[in-house]
Image (tube, rainbow, N blue to C red; front, side):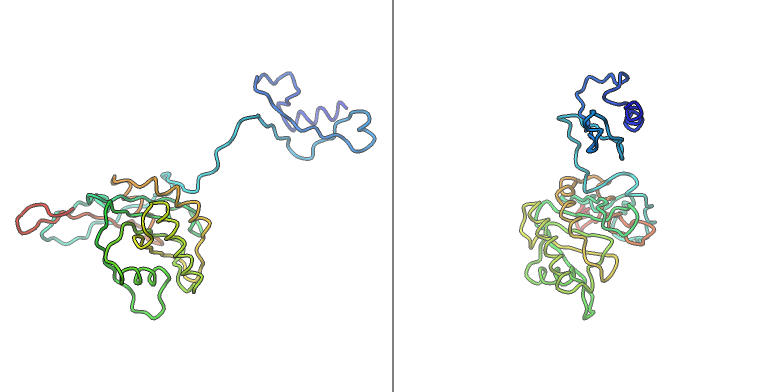
Length: 263
C-alpha cells in the first residue's frame, strides 16, 4: 500500500526502488511478503528493522587484530637517570639502537581497559646470549618457570615476547599451558625453534591469558618488526602496566682500545 511504501522509503532512504537513487551499481534488497491475506494482494510488510542494501561482489576487509595508532602509545618517556661512566648516553635511544635487533609493539586487547599497547616483541637477527634474574619466591609465574627451564638448557635466544594486562601468575597448570601455546604460536610464525623464544608477562595476578587475542594478534604483529627508534618505542610502551612513563635508553660503550665496542 501507499503507507507501507512511504515507510519503506523512510527507513531505507534512499530506497533502491525510488527515483532518487542514481547509483549504477546493482543493489539487492530483501522483500518481505505478508503471510496474511494481504500476501494475495501483493502487499508489502512494514519492515521492523532498517533494511540492508548489499552490493554484489563487494567484500569488506576483516577487522585487524592489532592496533598501532597514536592513541595506543600516548605516554611520555622517563627522564634519563643513567650515571656518568665510560659510555656515552643516547637519551633518545632504545633497544633498536643496537645493531642486529628489531622490535615492535601494539594494542591487542589484552588489557582490562584502555587502548594502550599491550604486546611487545624484541628480536635478534642471529642467536644472542641471554641472561635472566628470577624471583626466589616459591610461587613463580608461568613465564618465569618456562624461561628458567629454557635457560637451564641453553644460553641463547632469538626473540622475547612481553605482554601487559595479565601476569599469568597463580594460574596453575593451565597458565603454563597457555605460556607454551604462546611460545609455539610465535616460533611457528617466525620459523624458529620454540627454545629460541622467551616470554614475559606483567599485569593482573590470577587471570588466565586471553588466548584468542594472542592467536589472532601474533600473525599480524610479527610482520611489523622493525629497527627504527619508533619500533623500539612501541615495544617500550607495550611492556608498561600502571607506569606513567616508558623507560628506554641506549649506551655507547667503549673498550680498552678506545674503539666503539657496542651500542
